[in-house]
Figure 1 (cartoon, rainbow, N blue to C red):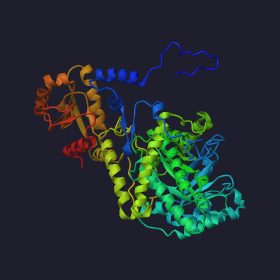
Figure 2: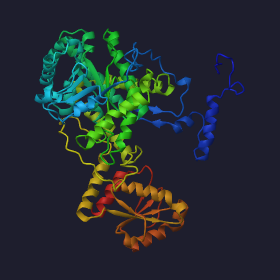
Figure 3: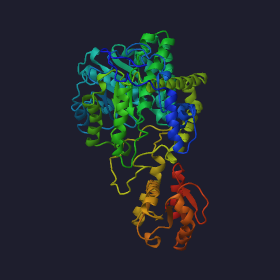
Figure 4: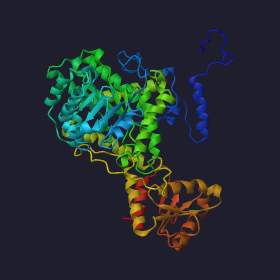
Length: 601
């Protein structure tokens, strides 16, 4: 139905309303031209995208896909934001991470847009004894501090509170989080921690209204390969475990909830990240409601750009990934956002990388004005439906954890590790088949790039859940190629044997070159096979040309010394062709086997 504007003039008055069925019929025609005979609802199924957690993104959303009312910002279920004004007053809190002492880096951040600090202390970070040095010159009443000290949390908290006392910070001006996360530490290391010192810290923190004791860190589950629903479900189970511990220690449910801050990963999957943060608030509001304190269900969120998505090859592309992730975190309503520097996966970031990281948020807030509207994605049929479906999937995962004894029990039994491993195995298959592309790594790699070197970062705690990266399989292949280059002065090579005119072979030659460069194998496109220095070749042309010339060309290549002949195109049976490379094939397996045959150890 067309709604008339106030002046009664409708620019669409002469056009009848289109129906969903009419749209489907138009799409049927388009698909028919591409060889797909589908009709009705099957049209949308053909164009749908399968996500993790059993979710599916459809090509079109309409009012018929409306989700439950998300409410208003600042009111339960807090889907649209924990505060009535959201981040509109001045944008989200820009929180920079520091895991090593670097002269002037903390002050440089604070003087150039950063509004709070995330300090990694103890194992894998800054020594607790050096906390005073790290915060030298910092106005602690202006810059909130979030600690991340693992087993040294109590010592780090004591040191921070002592600094506040020595510098005369008024209790009401002490802000941040002490970062206690016993279950998160156990997930990282496999070593359980006693909760009683954390409960004592929570009692001390009651004197500081702006200070929270615990961080419910979902990054260990994200970094172990977990899906969005698994990340949310595990964080919810962790938070519920902390509520139980704190209330048993004498705090009310409302006081206990006020001691928690939640940390989530923000990825370059923009809409999924937006939905994840919105679903997280809705889920926590439900827990607070069940606990009898619905007013305490406003979740405080710290979003961190995903370490899993960061690539070591062509790291400059990480700037683009973190920009999209930061946009999604801000639109999703995160209270604090940490942008990991583009060289995070390579070691300690340099001053340039830290500057780009903090300026990412500054540009999105000050120039793109993303914070001017509370929950700008709210009302989108797609975002609301995705939020609702993700919330249900996460709730089911949370319930399954509770049924198996809670977060600590599933960590210690190995059940959570197995769940995450299965999810990562499925995703790894997509990465290997390049159905989930990694720009600069599995797609459009640049073999001649100059490597970026950084000082090694402190080794983070380990021994628990694994830390995975999207680029790990391709990184191993490229490392083999690098070693071969260092040993022989040349990269392993493969000859692209193009058949017919450029119009016939260019697409598949480009595909083959892109594929083999992802494994560090240099494609040779000029001269003949004997001059190429390669031991393997790839036939590249059209299907019609293959039918006429593939077998003859393969025979000629073998006569010239080719030990293996590939064909770029769909599976067929041509004499003399050993293997076929095509869109969706297991690129990692193809590349690894090729390096093996070439003799690259």
